[in-house]
Each structure stands twice: as C-alpha cells, then as structure tokens.
Image 1 (cartoon, rainbow, N blue to C red):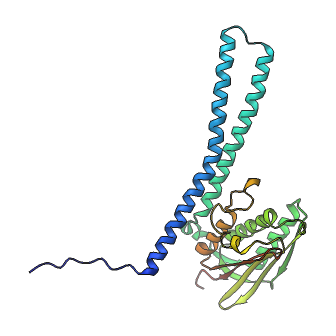
Image 2 (image 1 turned 120 degrees about the vertical axis):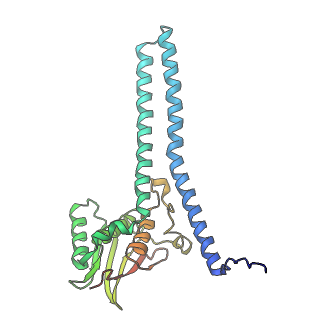
Image 3 (image 1 turned 90 degrees about the vertical axis):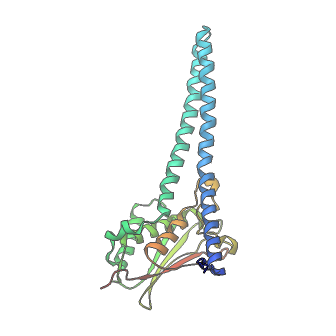
Length: 268
C-alpha cells in the first residue's frame, strides 16, 4: 500500500496578493534605504579621493622643495572645505539611520509606558510647549475637545505623533497662499473610544501623492534635505503601537487631514 504524501495547503489568491504587496513594500523600503545612504556615502568617497590626491601633491611639492606658504595655505583652505562637506554628509547619514530606526516600532519595549492618560491635558500641554518654545509664529493651533478625556494608552507615542505631524505641516503645508497655517486638533467620542483628528489648512496634496504619503522615504521636498520618514513613522506608531487604522484625506489647496481611533489598550 502506497503512502499518501501530505500535500501543502493551497494558498488563496488573497494571501498571494498580500504576500506580493508585502514583498513589494520590503523591496521599496530596501531600495529607499540604499538610495538615501548611498548619496552621502558617494559624496564622501569622492571627497576622500580628492583629499588623497591633494595630499599626494602636497607631499610631492614638499619632497621636491617646492612647497611654499601660498601652496600650503591653498591646501589648508581646500582641505577645510572638503572635511566640512564630509562631516555634513556623515551627519546626514547618521540622522537618516536614527529616523529609520523609528519606523520599526517595538511594541514590547513600550509596554511599560502604557498608562491611564488624560489625553486632553497631554495635547493642551503639547500646544502650550510648542507655542512657548518655537520661534516659528506661522502656525496657530485650534484645540477642539472636551476636558479630561482619559484613555489607557502610550502618552509618549501620542506626543511623538503630534511632534511629527506638526513638523510635517511646517515643512509641507506652507505655500504662496498659505504663509500662515492653522492646525485643528479634534478629539470626539466614537464608539468605545475617541476619534483623534489632526488637520491643517495648508496647500494640500494631489490624490496620487496622498496614496504614497505613508511610504518610507516618500517626500516632495527631497531637495530640501528631507528623508521622507515622518509620516511613515506616524503610520507605524498608530497601526502597531496604538492598534488603530489610519485615515487621511487631502486635496490641493484644501489642507491635509489624518485621523485614527484612540481607545483603551489596557483592560480596566
């Protein structure tokens, strides 16, 4: 009697689609990391090569007795410019890696930070702190929520989300007809929790851009030194740490809105 060989369960089309999308996302992430890291590394390799050539010329002049004060002064000036450029590019790479770490949210490490939080006070304190310390007076906050909203959540994560979203407004929301932006933060009862909505009245984005805003390294301001990780970090914090879906909407010249469900993450 022949043994029947166990067959592998068939993978559904939905599972195949999910795996394909997951691999596409991973591939895009790897490509983004490679591109962003390779740029400062490539510049530094070119700088190192140039510096080595200058040192070789300096040594040749020194060995031949042709090194004078003018040549040495030129070498010092050029070397200073090169090393300054190298430092900036290394700092850029370091900042990028630090930001990239935030994309991988480690929920287990944050478990000790879960606590009953007065979200109303937390948001009010964030706004007051920003208005007190920031020199940028082009932003105005409008809080729309009742006092004493108590939720078992991660207060540090809420603050990080608010910081990233406010930074995103400062970078992207301003435009010719939007020199001053208003941020409205609304927290309203919704089922077993609260709907948290963060809106600005800035320049907004197109439907095509809206589909990409949560992708790591996607940015419309790359030329200004932005890595495009801010909203990706926000997305991961909300989805993974706060266990909520993320909703966003925007139209050109009509601002940008992001919202999510804020609910108790700890049983009473």
